[in-house]
Image 1 (cartoon, rainbow, N blue to C red):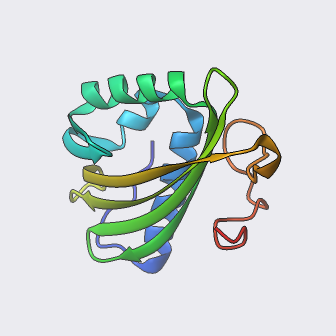
Image 2: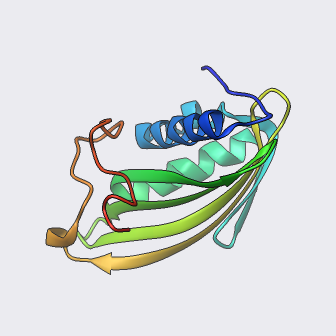
Amino acid sequence: MSTLAPPFTLQTATQKVRMAEDGWNSRDPERVSLVYTPDSRWRNRAEFITGRAEIVAFLSRKWAKELDYRLIKEIWAHSDNRIAVRFAYEWHDDSGNWFRSYGNENWEFDAQGLMQRRYACINDLPIKAVDRKFHWPLGRRPDDHPGLTDLGL
């Protein structure tokens, strides 16, 4: 898997954000874990995660609960080895209740471009199925699908 390494420009940071979105939309915990350092540290909501094995376990639990998961990420800011993003994703639970989850992430990368720190704040909004905005087939968001700003999110 290709990585982009710091220092980031706006162009490479934007590419890194799209690569992360594509990885998470694969819903493949093993694949996603490979873009993090072996000792990567996360805070995801109120959960603290360390290392690839815990990342795989976390993502496996997440995607077993958050069904038909579709995510859009958008760059917010960047510096030499850090990127801030905002994101939204839609999913439903096993009872068919739909949600749109909104959040912000702060990322820090090592010299090889692997993420060593990820801090995420996320809020869930119950929505009706008719209010969904993310309708592409499961997997990578098509290039012509609107992003968060275009969707008014």
